[in-house]
Amino acid sequence: INAEYMGTKKEQDKKVWDYSEKKAYADLKVPSKIWNRPDIDVTHRERYLAPEEFQQVFKCTPEEFEKYPMWKQSGKKKQAKLY
Image 1 (cartoon, rainbow, N blue to C red):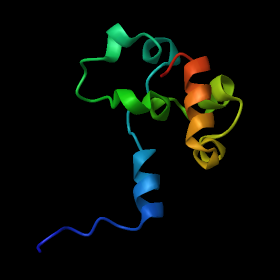
Image 2 (image 1 turned 90 degrees about the vertical axis):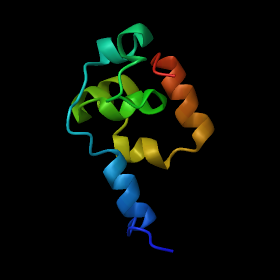
Image 3 (image 1 turned 45 degrees about the horizontal axis):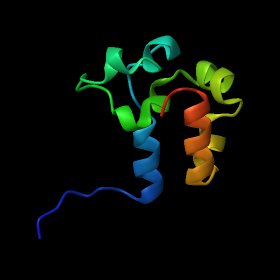
Image 4 (image 1 turned 30 degrees about the horizontal axis):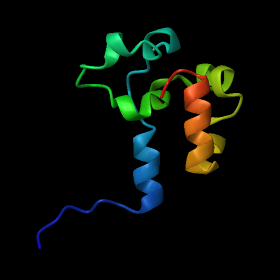
């Protein structure tokens, strides 16, 4: 099998949060503005927030958020209208 090196799980998780273009929370919570955009993974809209805005919306850092169980992440995303 000829496959590219994908890196460790930790490296992959870090890359997931390295979106170069941050988006405004006001735009991310309106599905009609972003749903058909190929540059946005709509299942992880929270990852496009700048760290400061993420902190305001979720009351935790992105690193803390990633440590939460999936049910808690989903609940917080629903509250923030990013689900």
